[in-house]
Amino acid sequence: MRRFLGILVLALLTFSAAPGTLVSESMAGESRVPLPSPAKAFKGEQCVEPAAVMRREHMVYLQHQRDETVRDGIRGKKYSLKECVACHATASPKIADGSVRTLQPFCAECHAYAAVTIDCFACHTDKPDNSKSSAVLDDDALMAMIENHLKSPGNTELKQ
Amino acid sequence: MTKAFDVSKRRLLAGSAALAGIAVAPGITLIATSEARGAGPATSKNRWGLLIDSTKCTAGCDECVVACRTEQGWQGHDRPTTDAQWIRKVSLKDNSTGATHSLPVMCQHCENPPCVDVCPTGASMQRADGIVLVDKHICIGCRYCMMACPYKARSFVHEDVTDQKTHMPRGKGTVESCTLCVHRIDADGIPACVEACTEKAENAMMFGDLNDPGSDIAKELSKQVTTRLRADLGLEPGVHYRGIG
Image (cartoon, rainbow over all chains, first blue to last red; front, side, top):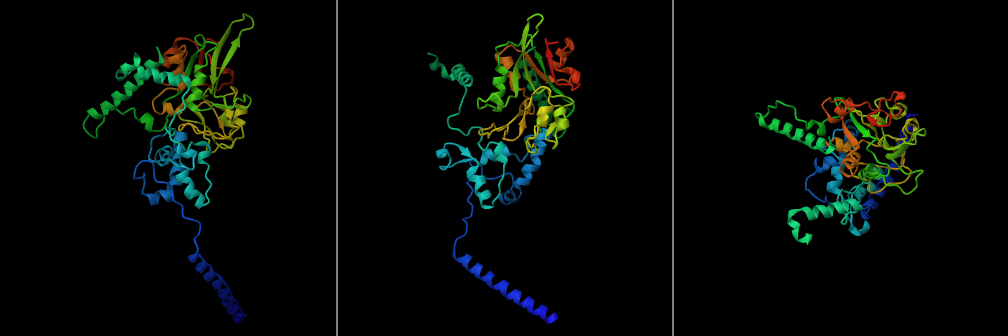
């Protein structure tokens, strides 16, 4: 019985080792799925934590803090999705001909690579407040802007 | 007393409290700064509420509705049966006399909110300061809260939403309603509807802390009897109406 077991283990080792070496050899030669290259931040050089920590922990920070914000009204703390968007939303020629800043070039790169499907942006906007080059204004806001512009002391020539 | 005055007064108070914090020796503060309101958690010291004077509110005016829509971004698709409606103008008529009046109705931010009672996930919630919200992170879109609300205050998002406001995430499959502009309140501001009514309309709306006897709203409430919609239900709404009793 013991001898039979020994042969079985040996046979298993042989079979499992052989394909393994084959795979690793073929991988070395060909390129795999290209590594993600998330876009550089729109502004700032340093994130709220070192990049390596952010890569691993960003979802924990966001999930923890979202409850504090919604349920307790604690705002303006260190981690905030709004701040993620403010820095990391970048324009890309692939999205609306580069006319808007979105998080796509940053978040989606790695999430697609890691096969992670997040739904933050089903509800949250991935565009910063001033993402559009020509902001869409309603009539009242436009009138108010013009009025303010005319009222300000530096714009006297426009009154005539 | 106008809301504009109320705002400036609160800003002034915040400013003077901050100054008091600096004036004393470093590390020693005699007065707790009111910055805590913006940064710290909501507490039950406050009970935010509204006073709506229906005698001032005019029938054709919808500045509050427009302001809310613009502020929170709930523009619809011109499909009245499914579009979101956070605040609506309601007209009432006394059939015996023919007298009519108009008033805005939104989430009444009840002290005993039935929407919170029925929520199976805990998404429908009440903050410590009395503001009733939907935590959309855990809302499953069952709409029990919509059925429980006697004010028809809540809406279900039926369609994909894009270009939301940064302060107001909105998404298909969740329920939403008036937040009393919680993002403004947390920054010591006032709701957009109140601001619009004060600046563009008849100054029929007032916002403030019902728990603070010194607040403008508390003083106004103590002057004259007000009505709360369906007070018989015992929900203790935070929105008071004048002129509909």
